[in-house]
Image (cartoon, rainbow, N blue to C red; front, side, top):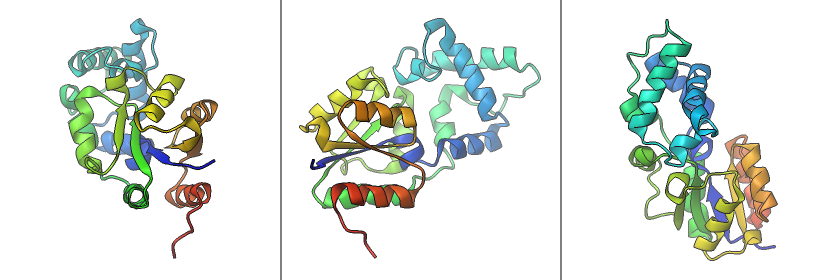
Length: 218
């Protein structure tokens, strides 16, 4: 097996961890992760979808999602002050005051220079594209970006792995996914890919070098 294509998840790999993103958001708004995810689940319930699917698959617009979030939070947590939440511009507010993960950004550049095809495989949102791409500054570096809201399929659906491999002209066994969610790594492996579960920068760097046969740098 020869790895030719390396795919990096955005949220939790190229970005700070999801928990850190939520903590930053809570400091800005006073709304915590549990409250946010409960409200998102309420917005998704009529669609019978995962709590992130309505926006990550462009089933609804951010404006529609924002109205749903305000209603759900008001109903679930009537004493909660949401006056600092700008749900209509949530992507800008969510990513503000956050920096990309420098170690993973450096890996993207290193493996691109080494001749690998490098991509970003992300479950993301139409209206959030500008702030997240501005954060990582990898336009013109990566070979492809496969974004759930544009291809209308999201990890861990196996179709997204088939599509991603085809877009860079690689066989499944020539691809590896780096992702922070076990279910996405499991789905990638079931699709014939290799996968590395992100736990920390050092572990991913070591496992990726071992997988592709590149020596560790000093």
